[in-house]
Length: 54
Image (cartoon, rainbow, N blue to C red; front, side, top):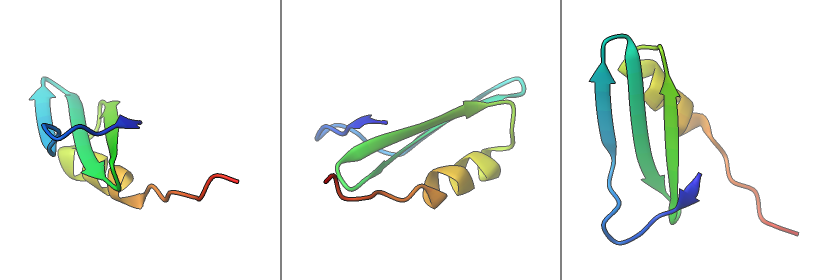
């Protein structure tokens, strides 16, 4: 996870069996990489929850 910039946007790349999916949420860029279907990568990124730092 990285801090998102103004130029950040959701992106998906598929090369062979490898999927790279990046999503921007709450000023953070979440990137999922693996040999999985694009829909699964999106579901994983969507399931990430942020907690407040204490």
